[in-house]
Image (cartoon, rainbow, N blue to C red; front, side):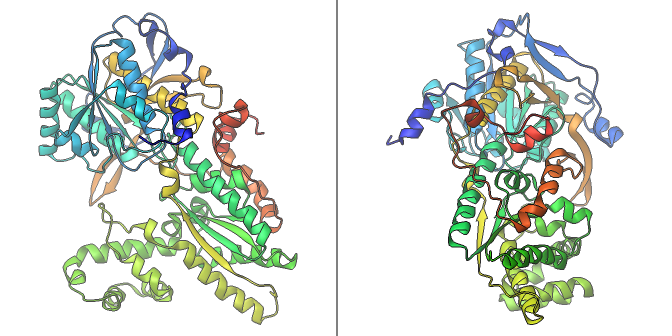
Length: 555
């Protein structure tokens, strides 16, 4: 292989472990808390998970770990979108298995959960692990978005487990993937199949979190990658002094990425979808907010700026939320008629005829490209693919129109030129930061420890993450503890609840206290590239979000 100097250097990095996991396997013990409850809909969830429901929290501690040295055969699945550090989860799992017993084996299922169903398996050995340590991506075994949900899929999964003699399956994924892990665990228990299922919290969006899952892996690296790019653009904007940059950032269901990047870079405007929904702001209100900053900065001779936009923004604007819901219904109910239409103009007319007056008026007012993007092919769940909607360009058009009106009225005399960007895939497979390299290795190691202890239906947990890694606390959280029931495809389904930005939380309050100054002044902050070598406060620093949530001092 022709590898870069950085990749070669990262192979040699040794992730730091919490004290409890750094001990010999026979010295790793478990302590158990009291019974747990789900977030909501408890009776319904008890009926769905009669065996797994109510399990206690688990903490891994230094003690008598008798039984942790058993020989195990474990399968691992990467599920959903990529996130930096996935390879280190597998490496941590492998290292734990081999530390416990050199005869233990790790089986990777290629292409996500579908790989388990179809038995697309490969043996993962030390040579393969060493090719992927501390690197980004999911390409070691690949990922996929298949859900194991039909009786046939569950039965085929159980057949693969029996045939391969698996002691556990580790599911590395987000909220939907780990909900699937809980259902798989319950199925195995109902079939008297002695195979545990342990989840690992993954998503760059940062919306799989709670008291015991302080952050999902990949969020740290992805936001630092985006923040570097934003900082570079801010420096360019302040140098050229002629463009307003509208930057859309990943994060469909929550604005954690946009908020974290704002805290790192201090843009002139950063939109938070949760605040817009709570305030029932319209598209016009959002346009006015941006224009106020443009006009105020122009009055100071600064016809440049930076705006951050969450990927899922339009789904949080009340009027747009209604429109998208109605569009989803129309395209689902009249799919055959819609697909038979010959061109985009016919499709737009078809949609307009089937919308209520309010939704049709909004839809008709949108630029043609946005109209077409809103009726593109749906995702596997039947929803609009918001990442393909150029919200940043929509806002540019609306801001241009509003500024033209202000200029005609004599209340704006500046110039406005714009650039549009979408930062998404750039951050999903980056070399993991030291934080994510350490965190992911610890999560994989914890998943092994939970497996060796014979547990199932748990999500691996590592917390106290604002402290040095040696002080992190590893353990497991019952998957049912994080669940409620939601309406999906016409029926109630158990799901792990997504964590949205809390408007009364410390990260948002810190942002809200500073944004009025950022809107007018050039207060840009330049995080620079992720650093792997040097002082710990540079190389091992967690996100601003995590520091603020844990009350740690910001530097």
